[in-house]
Length: 355
Image (tube, rainbow, N blue to C red; front, top):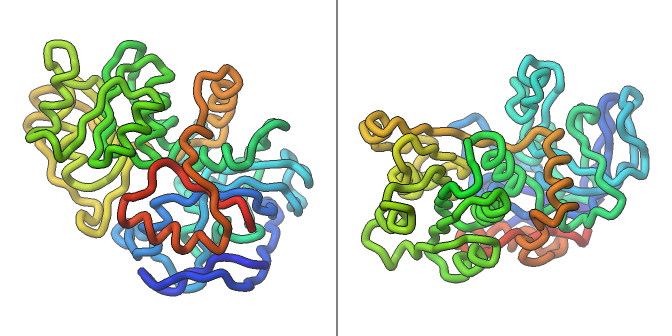
């Protein structure tokens, strides 16, 4: 089968013939219909995240936001049949650890990041395998659009889980979103759907215009203000700050700006993962956090059972993940699309839908 193959950090990738995946007794093999192209793919292509034990090895196939048709089912699988259209979280769980038993499969003790390790290759390929299918595979509604659902991948899912399950957000609360790439725009859209007042922060006018389209009440263009946290607070009642502030980019400055945008007892939500500049370490205004009793929370993916919440909100017209999909590309275009993400020029979520 054809797949986009990684050779070395920063080196051009290309489409090659590779072996089709084997079907594990507890897993499935899926024919790919669509797969989101994510900035996390760019990070992995750059060789980032060795500091958290993730290392891109030659022969790796990226792609962790898939949708497809089940073509082979392992003998132990009971929840999926051949011909089902499915998706899955990028952070695959084994279903057996204590956290999985509590419904927190996204932080499984033996979580496997699909498309980032050689024993769980991704979906920039004609077929891909999913392990522990009864835990990880989500059967889609009959009328599901593969491109739209691929846009639900790690960015929308992580933002949704973070906004709906990790922070205490209610109607009328103020939310600042720092960084309006795919995950940031998703956070804007979900927070707006929940009735929050959203302040979107970014360098690019195009990204801020898209954030406004998706529900942001106010925007802050970073290079047009002297003090980003002060600008964010200026939109909130009595300049008190945001109830929730999201770092959706992962660089040191956006993380600090997010923490400093908070009101007393506000909650910072970290969605963006860091780059090689930070290597996972960011200095923070700890005394401010203590004096104001602010909280610092992370959001990593989403357990499979929360997809149903998204589908119900989609059916009700409350959210529209497809509105964040920016364009579609072919498998041959995936390498250049990933490479371009280092320039932060992508607005929204590109999806590969031609294999």
